[in-house]
Image 1 (tube, rainbow, N blue to C red):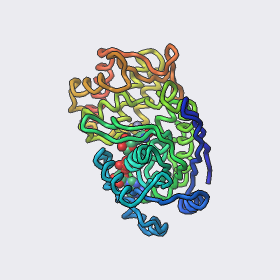
Image 2: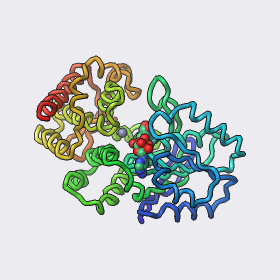
Image 3: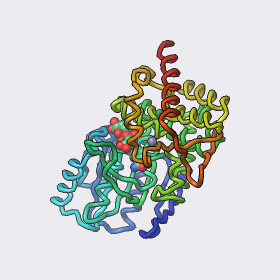
Image 4: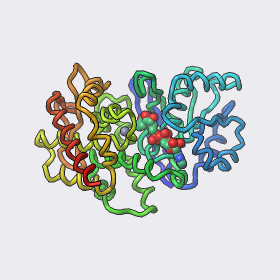
Length: 371
Ligand SMILES: NC(=O)c1ccc[n+]([C@@H]2O[C@H](COP(=O)([O-])OP(=O)(O)OC[C@H]3O[C@@H](n4cnc5c(N)ncnc54)[C@H](O)[C@@H]3O)[C@@H](O)[C@H]2O)c1
Ligand SMILES: [Zn+2]
């Protein structure tokens, strides 16, 4: 068991400190201890239905009468669900002294966090992430939100949980594809900050090594969030691979899992890093080889079918852009981001972005033909 204490100072809102407790088969013990320490008028569990199917005995042993099952998948992260659940909470008498507990991946975590942030103007919540992605990414950092018909995460808030319990026990039932999906975010953490960690991730590793690798990613993300809780500057580096990645994900109609779109995005943004003479050609080629070897460049047929027009529009409309210039985080070596004029992203015009997209399509076509 290892505990990281996240101390987040938000300008004008104060300082938030909360523990992220990391281990295996320890969540029940820590949740019980937390509930005993404080008095809550009611405790409601929001649980992903697939997680509940696999772990219902453990969850029910908690004896809460309020287990609200959330249908699996991104479509549960919407405003109607928020209205439905807040209605249920009101009818059950939840008040400002009540607690919500999220057990599931990023979908349940984001939804529960958002509900907790607005119900009675804010109630506490605990996150128990059950996917790789939610352990290393969405449960850390206090971003909550839901999707609207206009796009992903367009309605949301910052609301820090009171406690995060990352229990690798849940990963036993997580499908391999979902593991890999979250693994890409771990690789991203390594590429922006820690070259040695990147080497560890790329070497073959056993099941027993997963927890310490996950922990390293949590430390990296926690350190960055701690320094920049409201995404004003440093936190931008977490967007490495995501400018192109989001555009590809959107253009492909979300038929690619987020992590896999980001894997292609990382290669595209590494290409842009190389074009700016930051990353060496050798390191770019090494990344491509490693990603192929680890099976991260999946669904090349989807990438090769996209047209530049499909990708261009979401790219230019990325909410992180300013005045139609597209900003991209670049690395100058494996494990280090290169800042530019006091910020962590570099401006790009359409011509260079299209070149990066063509580069990805060449890799995709090459892979597609070989299969
Ligand atoms: N708040 C943030 O900072 C942040 C950061 C990154 C991503 N996100 C959000 O996170 C979401 C994606 O999260 P995700 O990848 O965890 O997806 P998810 O929550 O949809 O879970 C993926 C799938 O795995 C299933 N599942 C979850 N845990 C399981 C387990 N232990 N065993 C078996 N099946 C299990 C789920 O039912 C689902 O089908 C997106 O909505 C994204 O916007 C938020
Ligand atoms: Zn991501």
